[in-house]
Length: 140
Image 1 (cartoon, rainbow, N blue to C red):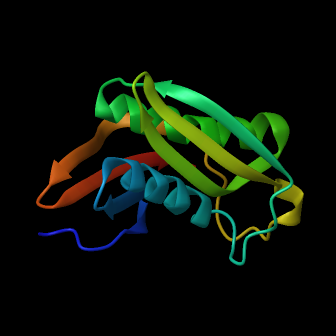
Image 2: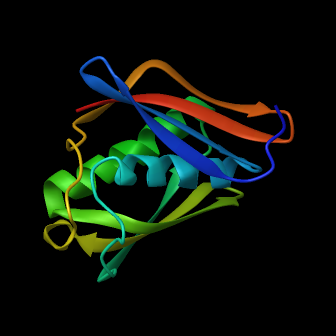
């Protein structure tokens, strides 16, 4: 299947949540995975950002990139009560530059179970015809 545009879907999974995302580039696919995770527990419209968080993910195995990125969403939520409302991922010579525009979790409207952890079982981030696709299970 050729990837023409970016998108995502969340599917209920036995006691968990299954996220699928796709996009023309790996960076866009990672952004869609974050959007899918956030959309699974807060409603749109998303609150306005009040801060930013930036860091570099090491250029590692594709599935590790996906897991580390989604783990950071959960960490920010649990530790700082922030949620990313916009995400940018860019390739750099040293890895991936990630920028989250964060909003206060208390300002968001809850619509689903809060994520607890990223499952490493059956996680995939792979190139497909004309794009990238990922699948990951989230413990809720």
